Image (cartoon, rainbow, N blue to C red; front, side, top):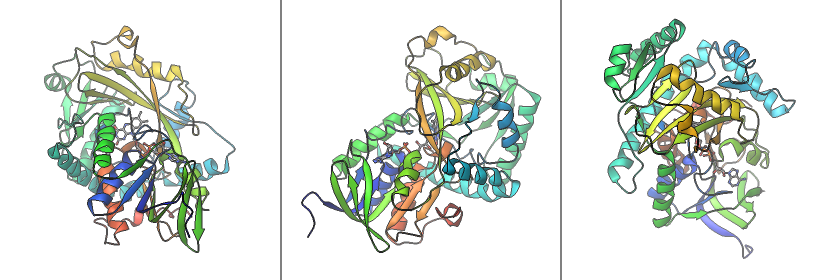
Length: 422
Ligand SMILES: Cc1cc2nc3c(=O)[nH]c(=O)nc-3n(C[C@H](O)[C@H](O)[C@H](O)COP(=O)(O)OP(=O)(O)OC[C@H]3O[C@@H](n4cnc5c(N)ncnc54)[C@H](O)[C@@H]3O)c2cc1C
């Protein structure tokens, strides 16, 4: 007999970020009774105040040739956009070893077509969400512009444009005056740019909070402020999750805990290679002047997104554990980079802006973990989306539903196997 506190659902999702919420949407659409548990408010992890790009143009994984030597140079600067804090933590050491092994041309060549396919499919699903008009999330189809200042970055952009063409993604190199015509709202100071006309963007907080409300009104059980702390397992099946508010049983379990997923998986004896990649954003809530198209400052690795009345600047990747404290000099470095690329902003615009930090769940090879666990037959892992978790959330949710239903997934997911590093 079940204890009184046990609640039963068809599917129980652990983690209510954009990945857990999108999974809940497609699972409940296919008729499942779904519950989602989050230790805090829904969507308030990494999914909240990020740059909001939905960008099939991000088809090159983070783990790529050159990143190690570039990363080592950056590590010497306290204001650089990339930092790995060396730690004597066995999980970190294992992750770092696989990260280094993944920084090869072969890994990039293998990953790119899949990232493109998932990105294109995800964007099409976002368009369906926008057309549904169930909630507003500032969906905007204006493309994405990378701005560069140096010859070296120009060359990188040319290579990226060539790769994009090979993958069937529209991309166009632009001169400074062509850039200025495209974004007349701000003074362009960069030397030139690379334009991806098919990328889109949105306000991520509106998406996750709107989706959470939509799910709840559709009967999905959203369990807030509830920490998953353990599991009851029989044979190779999970029977229950133990939480701070009682036990929950289900037929299927989905692990979508973002950067916290390895800690949760450890309770099941599952090793999941994910490190938190901290990033910051800082938002001017009422911006009179802003480019209509989102920008990336190439050398500074800063993302700029117009969001309704606001403009957001985001950047930095600090691999330094599960820590959301703000390193102010790195936030200042984001703000200080702005006048090198566009005019019209100065430090006083940020006087009342509160910096935000989020933890990207970074896998060693730049690909998410998505698929059934080898160890537990009723566990689906959906975590590790790093810099493209917003971008790939809708297709991830759809794939989770397909896996749970026992259907053949719409894409070959071999490269995303959560046990690929075992
Ligand atoms: C500065 C910055 C800019 C970014 N820009 C973009 C962008 O433009 N486009 C893009 O695609 N991606 C972007 N990203 C990445 C994107 O934000 C992430 O990939 C994505 O949000 C990950 O979603 P998630 O649902 O896996 O994780 P999260 O949103 O972190 O959700 C995980 C959830 O699990 C919950 N949880 C954890 N442990 C437990 C537990 N024990 N019990 C219960 N619940 C638990 C947490 O509370 C949290 O809500 C950016 C990230 C940052 C930091």
